[in-house]
Picture 1 (cartoon, rainbow, N blue to C red):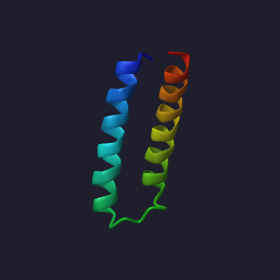
Picture 2: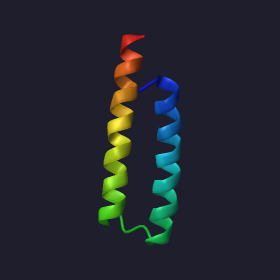
Picture 3: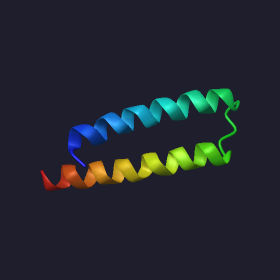
Picture 4: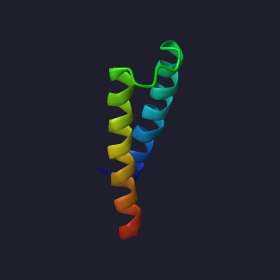
Amino acid sequence: MKERSIQERILLLREELYVISNQLNYELTHPKLVTISQQLDQLLNQYAKIQQKA
């Protein structure tokens, strides 16, 4: 996955996490939020690896 694509996906997931957490009254242990958070973590790790190589 290219760096630009990862950055865009990170931004989208952050926004999605914020919106859904609002809808769920910040119930941070809700399975949907946990799943999105894990996806975001994976992308952030991928991005960090790309940055280390640069």
